[in-house]
Length: 391
Image 1 (cartoon, helix red, strand yellow):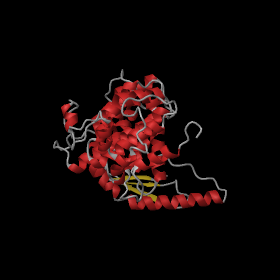
Image 2 (cartoon, rainbow, N blue to C red):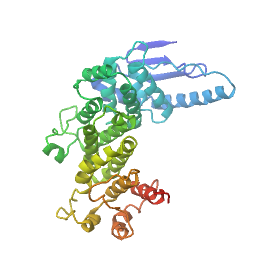
Image 3 (cartoon, rainbow, N blue to C red):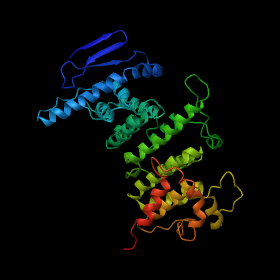
Image 4 (cartoon, rainbow, N blue to C red):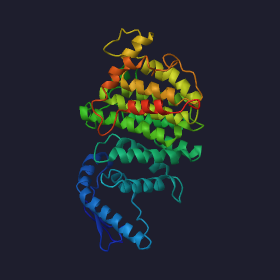
C-alpha cells in the first residue's frame, strides 16, 4: 500500500478495485474542523474522479463474482474520510460503505466503544443534515439512523458516557438527549418558537443571522433528523417515554406551520411517526393524537380564517388542508383496536357526505401528479381499499 502525503494533497492507492494500477486521488486540505466549508469545497472537485473509479470498481466486482473469484476485502476508510464519502452523489453504495466503517470505528471496534469519536460523529452527522451539498442529507440521515440504532443496542452506561462526552445531561433518556441536540443544531427563525422561549434564531458561523437558503437548510435538516430518529426505532423502545414522543410530534407540527411548502413533508413525517408507534402501542398513538395532534394541528385555526368555529364539524371540514386530511384519515385507518379518539376523529372524516366539502382542498393537489401524487391520495387509497371487519 502506497501512502504519500505532500503538503495539502493526499494520494493513496485504492485496493478496493480489482483493476491493477487503479488509483484513487482525494484532495483534502489539512486545516482545522472549523474550516470545513473550504475543505468540502476542495473535496468536491475530486468527486468526478472518485465516481468514475467507484463505477469501474463495481463493474469489476460483478465480473469477479460472475467468474467465481472472491473479491478482495474492502480497504478500511479513515474515520474522518467517512464523512466525505457519506456525501457521494453518484454512488449510494459508497455512502453505505462509509456509514458501515464509521459505525464500526465508533461503536463496534475490537477495542470497544470509542466514546470521544462517537460523540464527535453524532454531532457532525446532525450538522451534515443541514448541508445541501451533493447527497449529504441522504447519506448523513441514513448513517445517523443506523448509528442511533446501534448505539441504543449498547448498555446504558455506554450511552450515558457518549451523551455526557457530547455535552448533554447523562440523566436524560437517550431519545430526549438526541432531541435536545438536534434542536440546538438545527435552530431556525420561527416566531412561535421565539415566543415560546425556545431560543433565538440561530446565527451563522460569522455571527450574523441565517440567510434564507441557510434557514431552509436548517429546516430540512431538522426534518431529516427527526425521520432518522423515527426510523432508528429508539422511540418505540421500552425505555422511551411518551413525553419524548410528544416532543417529536410537536416538532413536526412546528415544521408544518413554518411554510406552506413544508406542510406535506411534515405531514408525511407525522404519518411515519404514528405508523411506527402504532406497531408498538396503539394506546400511545391515542394519547399523542388526543393531546398533541388534535389540538395543535387539526383544531389549529388557519391564518386566513382565525375566527372560524372549529367546534362545528361543518366549519372544520371547510378549513381542513390536504395535509391535515391525510393525517386524520391515516389515524382512522391505522387503528386495528378501534381506539377512541377525541373530536373531530371520533367520527369518520371521509364519508359520502363530507367528500363534496373536501373536494376543494383535495382538487388543489391534483394539478401536478408527476413524478408522484400528493401524500393524501396514498392515504385515501389505503383507507378505501383496506379490509375492515372481514369485508
